[in-house]
Image (cartoon, rainbow, N blue to C red; front, side):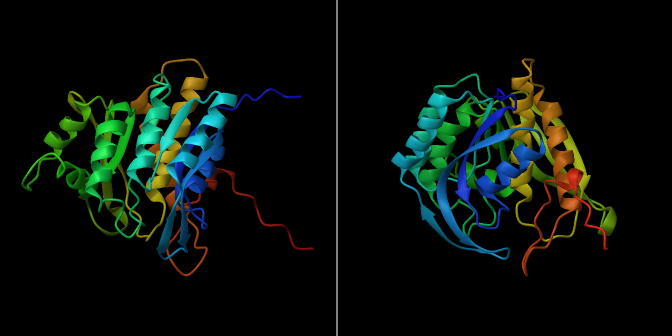
Length: 284
């Protein structure tokens, strides 16, 4: 018998039949980066590589029971919370992770592939902000998602990126990674940037090459890789350098996008196993 030595990560998210987003994408990222994934399903998608057609919500009691049974049996090195289907789910998950305050929580609650990206329900946005964001080690979201969430606590529009991030870090969120904060160049040399904030403001800006795509699952790849890298640091027993983990997760995501695959007639799917490609069998 061999004792489990790989870091364990519990991810909450939707089940995607394509494996591009949600818990399937997370499990692939975890495996590619030397971790073992445990999963709690929050919803079941009907989807292909072009679009998500429908979402079936999983009862919050089932979400809670899935997680509690696993956590009573195993010790996890990180949590990841992805797309949720109801306020009740958010409340159940917030209560669960609050019992493990020393375990890093990667929060990536919005999916651009969903019809409304998870941004249509004000009650859901308020719940995420009030009970999950304060517990997050890292919150990942785009400028559009940040602005939409900010509508739940302020009136008026305008460019208030730093002020909106400060609201979230002031609630207890350790880091906020805002994706695609700027672009530079054009064509094959175009660059995008993600900006990391903490309670004191900008920590750093991470530039990366823009790929034409279109892709499904780029954001899920980034947050899944980050959860795995944070878990590896915790599992090793040392202090986790979140900034280094974010940089490494972005590099992993760039590699997955550069080696993306087209499975069907829709969007490209990031290849999480690009570093471990298996050569085709030789011809006889």
